[in-house]
Every structure is written in C-alpha cells, then in structure tokens.
Image (cartoon, rainbow, N blue to C red; front, top):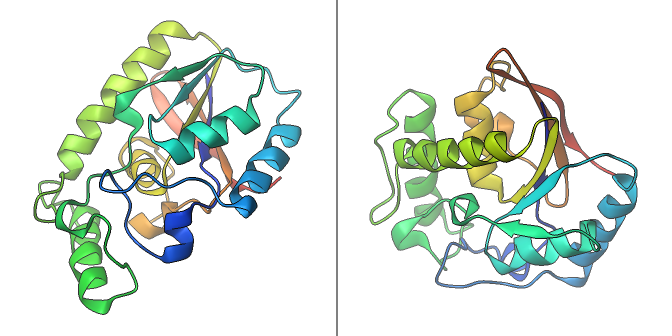
Length: 197
C-alpha cells in the first residue's frame, strides 16, 4: 500500500505566524494556491484510489486544487493538532513558542500524555490517526492520498513510520509539499519525504 501525504499550501495563518487550530480557519494565500496547483500538475499521472482531506478550509482548498476532478472524502480525524490556549496566538512570541516546543520535546522523549493547556496529547493524536488508517486501509487496497496539516502529519511520521527522523521536528513538512509512505507486512516506511513539485 502506498500513501501520499500532502501538507496544505501557505495559509493566511502561516503569513501571520499564528497557531491555527479551530479559533481561526484561514484561507490559502495566493502563494498557497499556486503551490497546490503545481503539486496537482506534479502528481497528475499518479494512480490514487481515494483522497481523504481534513475538514479545515486550507486543506480543503489545497485538495481541490491538487485533485480538481476527484471526489474528496472529508475526515474529521485529519484536523490539525489541538494547541489549546495557543490557538490563534503568535508562534514567534518566545513565551508561546516555549509552551509549544516544550510539549513537542516531551513527546519526542516518550511522554505522549503531555499537552498544551486545553489541547490534545500525542496519545489522543495517535488514536485519531489509527481511526484514519483503519478507514483508509479498509477502503483502499493499493494507494490513497491524505491532505492535512504539519503537526498532525509530523506525529504520524514519528509515531508510525519505522524510519522517521530522529527528532520530532525532523518530520516537519513544508507548506505545499508531499511525502510518500509505504506499508508492507504492517510496517510503515517513509519512501520520499517533503517532496517539492
């Protein structure tokens, strides 16, 4: 089985440098739309059975531009990671960033129960991702596309892929990029990471 993971293109929240979970639901910027269009051209000839997409606007817009003729299957479990009290706040503010990165570092160290106040733990993220994988693996036999967000995808690679980057942040995809993962005998492996069209 082959999985094509796409991170949405640049959003208004990326430009504003704010955490975006649910308080704000930003659109793509012009740059983000162009990133998605280029990715659509890049993957045009790839055989993909179904396309699963986060319900958040930036992911939906990206998926429509990459796969303009395909039915999109919205899956709530592909939403971005809940960052609790940081939602809508600046991530370049050093206090906010420390709160956030301390939790990421705790996850990396194996404390998957850690969370930003009011947010979700890596254990809860893993439970969501298992639901996504069960659905995708139940509906597809050879390939699937998943369009989502940087943090939820970073957790997927770190939690599920045998050959993930050493540090959690090593598994962070850039905006408008694709990563290919394969599964054989129940083992997930990253084949190509953070591909630019």
